[in-house]
Length: 299
Length: 326
Image (cartoon, rainbow over all chains, first blue to last red; front, side, top):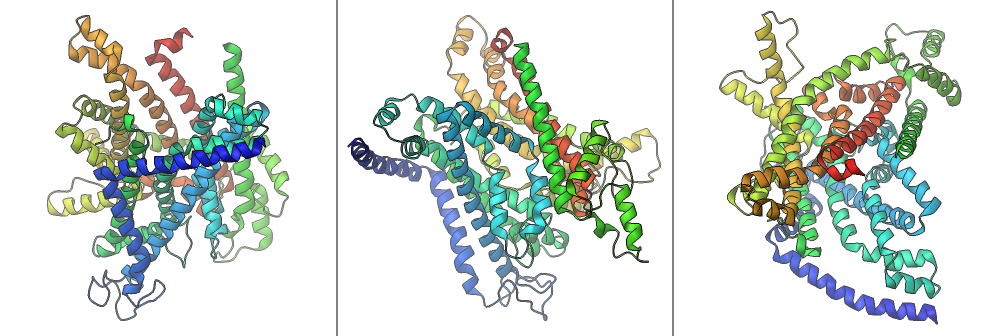
């Protein structure tokens, strides 16, 4: 019976939450920077996933009749020193960077939400152990650990890379979530659920985490750009996505060597990366303002 | 209070020990120092390689735990062992720490001061032209990864050198074998510093100005600022002495952590501009499977993060009287 009440209460909540979602979306799209960021990111996705069909070159192809050639009708964005088509490899790198960025952000934020909420809800030893792990990960140099583990990422094991990258991006958010859970836990609806006999994990997933959703969504968005930047930097130094696969980072690393006399090898990859990160940051900032109109200060 | 601080310090020490040990185990388990000696011409006999690796405590054939105990024993005496070349890690990293410090100090100081100034001014003139321009610029700069920014700066510097006059040096800390008096040496070093400093400072200015602007806006409407002006303080005095000081507290925390992480984290700038500092060694030591150096750098990073958190406590106490009373 108590559980049934709980389900019913949840349904009521769900009806309200859709309307809130619509309100937030409305505010988001009324902001110029929100519209701009969304349009730019959508454009990047379309380019990255539909673009490769516009050319018959793939990212592994090499044109032995055209080394380091400027953009032309045959190669839209020119070719690299190896004869690879810049258009094809850049879009392939974009796909990788976008997928890695999105996955890492989702995993990192989910991990932060769960760990932070459990620590804040149970307190005591659970809290001490989890927060100690958070402190340890903060002290561990993430870049160094990822670089050491990079040989493991070769041979298509980039999902492992994604998980490791996420493992070093969630700690600060987990601390924030913990702090908010501690205060949320005292609220009436949580007490009510507890007195109805709802088990603690259910309370956390059904009441605590949904109530933190605005923070988590904004955090996940900003994590996307953090993840893309970290991935690019690691790949730049050869510690991220491993050849033969490419990422924007490895392309920028190669392109920077030839950029002086062959600008197309550098600027397309670098430019697309900047536009992507800019779009994600704009979306994150607008989302924060949309969720919290009192903080709507960014122009 | 003293007990609280003591417990906190003890916790820090445990964290550093665990983090460094983990990094050592991971590095010793995953990296292969033998590759440095194999494939040489003329080839070294395996027995010689083994003897060399044993001497450096790097032999992967020995159990990991045994190597760890030997290494940890030395570290307890303040000795981080030897690099794959047989040099002392302590001496090597000590020299590099100096290089890194000379590289980042200007960038961090300029970056944070300018960032705070820009952010505070933008907040005072909210929605004015200065605010709009700096906000847009900050968004653009924050979207440029340091690897790209540094390369763009090099490209711009090189074309400026070709077109006008040779001002920017894009590689190294100074011109080796440069003759000349003291002034020439200083100018040479400054020329080498220009671009790396810009590449460090620009992202810092962007981040700090965003932080500072938001913090400043929060306090501008506060009662204590109005009170300060009501009791006769000029607007300028009220803004700098009351509003800015309060709004600086979060920026101080951020400053401490930036400084701490940059000690090792100027990796990208160092590597691209060819400065032989700690960050460059971080990349090189992994590429050369130099386990002892990797572990030592991990230890330094952990220490600098903790030093940063101590520094942020001190800075907060200096700016916030309430903390000192408590």
